[in-house]
Amino acid sequence: MEQNELKSKIEELQEIVDTHSKIVFFGGAGVSTESGIPDFRSVDGLYHQQYDYPPETILSHSFYLRNREEFYRFYRAKMLCPDAKPNDAHKKLAELEAAGKLIGVVTQNIDGLHQAAGSKRVYELHGSVLRNYCERCGEFYDLEYLMGTTGVPTCEKCGSPIKPDVVLYEEGLDSDTISGAVSAIASADVLIIGGTSLAVYPAAGLIDYFRGDKLVVINMSPTDRDRYADLLISAPIGKVLSQINV
Image 1 (cartoon, rainbow, N blue to C red):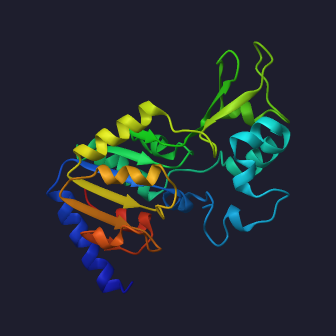
Image 2 (image 1 turned 180 degrees about the horizontal axis):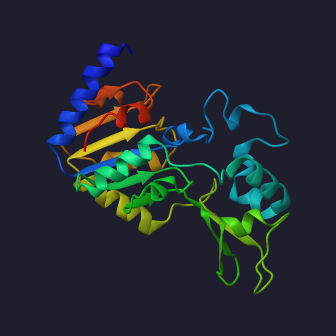
């Protein structure tokens, strides 16, 4: 995108932000790539590397049940980025919420960076690596505890396996999280979609509940919702949002 065109589109986004007060942000992996967290579907992402099993298989519920050792070997090596910090996109969204402009963040990411930046109303559709629970007694374990274990982590209280609070393939989304996300999107007057290819369902289908005034899409690659967007910006999400004044 030409610099002048980008400048003009950012000015248009600024106008939308200035004139609306019920904004919802719907984001995906592209929001966190600027924090050094790999995008599964990018050219250099996890899907394009070689493993004994495809990542989709390893990160499935059935694989987890039958091969926890291999699951955790992959999970620790490729899914956990404990040193990642919020980037400009996360920070600006937190600022917008604090200013009373943004009413919610709906994210497909599991890294917890929105909360680390200060966002309060975050709907984590696919869970979070920061939360882990014993499969039997439900005892909570944080990321630091998990990082300090090897093999299959087990509960200190009952000895049962500990499972990350992330939604694996073949698992359903949390109903309360879905309900909150749908409510936020349905009540928004602006929906900003950013850093997502909208290829993962049912998560991507939630944007169908938007009935507001302005649909904004900020993404480096095309999405199937581009043709419905009132404003389409093909640029890095952090670069765009960092230039918005709150």
